[in-house]
Length: 106
Image (tube, rainbow, N blue to C red; front, side, top):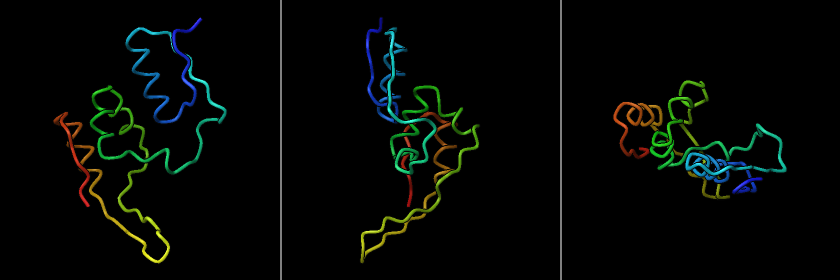
């Protein structure tokens, strides 16, 4: 018997399950997909992500895993592609060292 069943184990579902389990709930996560899945939108850590991951105690594991760091990305809007450079490595290190909020710089 479970207290909570989370449907979908990607970013939102996994985060919800983690936080509920830490509060003492017995949690089951179900997802129709097999993991790991190669989906770019599921692997990008947005602006507030490093701060939350640090607060939840998992940021250091992500950094140590050797996962590739995104330093450049392009959003193609047809006739208007946008390309950005970021100092994401420095952002992750500053969160790890200081533990406070950060922002991505373009």
